[in-house]
Length: 63
Image 1 (cartoon, helix red, strand yellow):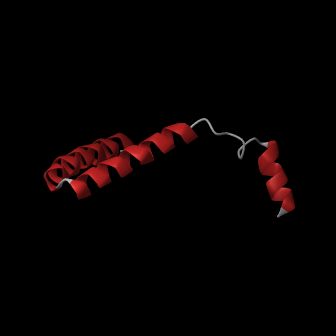
Image 2: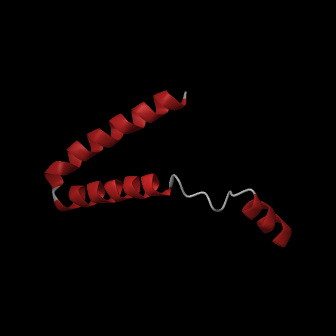
């Protein structure tokens, strides 16, 4: 196991954090949207619509 860990460190896979900030911001935006939907029921439909559109766009991009 130590050899695998050393190999991953030497390949810089574990050190690469370039995409970390983007993922953190996306998660934070998702949490804020969910909280807003829970606090304000009128916003829940709008948030659901936005997430549905995003999901559709991601599905289209993936295929």
